Amino acid sequence: MINKVVVKFKDGTALKGQMSDFFPNKTSFHMEQPEGGRVEIQTETLKAIFFVKDMAGDKDHKKTYDDKLAGGGRKIQVKFLDGETIVGYTMGYSPDRAGFFLLPADSKGNNERIFVVKSATEKVEMMQM
Image (cartoon, rainbow, N blue to C red):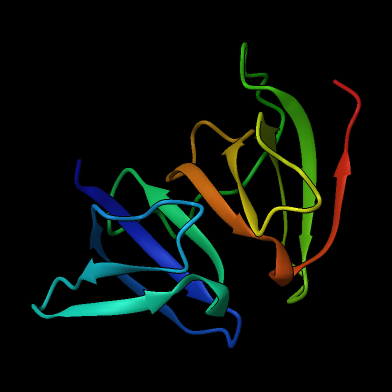
């Protein structure tokens, strides 16, 4: 399956493209860039992988994290080292894993799901639903 993604690095840079060989337990994956070319990305250099609906996104969208996702798992708040905070639902968070998937509690946003790299987080906390 080909996924449209935006990968954000810990250094603040980002790349857009498509990938099909990402697995949470592997240390790297390959990404096809829109202008052509294939790059290998080391997962540990990332802040997160944003699986998106549309490559253009919506710069005017105001994030709201009030949506309830039935069957989405536990509600969680992630604060990244760069100050960004995202709220969503997870079924796979474990403090001893290198990363986990998050379903954003903002269904009107462009992100379908996010793979959070744990070493890029400042704080991960479970929330009341």
